Image (cartoon, one colour):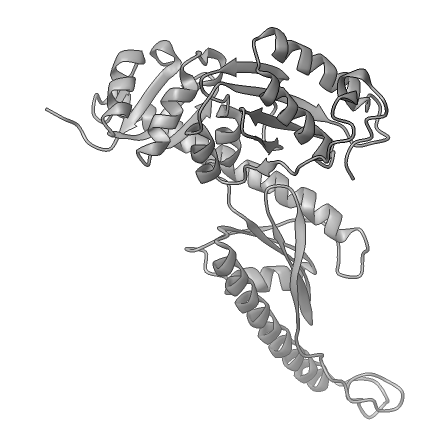
Length: 366
């Protein structure tokens, strides 16, 4: 639900005005479109605590940020749009980036990296945190499996949603003398009978694993997912993993519970977000490693403000790298130009490059 603002003075003037839904930035394309809107822009990063949490006085928190924005020169229309945006967003207990100009507001949840509260007013919106959050993000497909089926979920930027279920075959047993599976002469199971029964069970479970894997593949392709996370019966998780194409997907087993556990979906959600963050950090580290090799070989890597900005504006930047601790006032403009030319943007720590900025080039000019 939306935040309860009570009768705080800062909100009184718009208290009777419906709170319009703010546009959520969920893709890099959304960010690029926001970068191209006319300014000035007012941007803020702040926590939207869940009602009932310690320190959940959202009105006091927002009033402080609003005052800072006003002192920084934010226009009345932008502030009003931010007022309505904060009122309309369901508090999730996460950091959020909000930005507005005179025409409207947008927001992006920041759940994948630690950020500090900030306010910014300028010609360009301060969207680098959103770029960092969304540049390499893709939906994740997850499943809770057992030997007869699976519950399948799709996890996006913040939420987990059911995406269907799969039901396979049960292992049939012949009941003789009150026992499951064929009985021997003494009423027990002979070794041959047990072996036959186990072979039959293995065939059924393997067939079910293949069916689950097919359903997961279909869902992953439909949602453009690259990561599949599995939990449940250990043996069936391993079997399903063997049927998935390791060249197309990264498959990760986790311990989040079984299908009959009411809390398994919640634990699976947390496990997926953790695994997704781990995968993205690894890809970011690989990209930084590629940049350092290129700089060391004096080939496709350049660093420093002058050379980097020139390459970006000429459309030669495959990936722009920005050191998180050295971001300058013009960083959003440079990031916008790189994205508009189809490049990627990596915000990293301790890049160790001149001016905290570098680029991996598509090609080298003479």
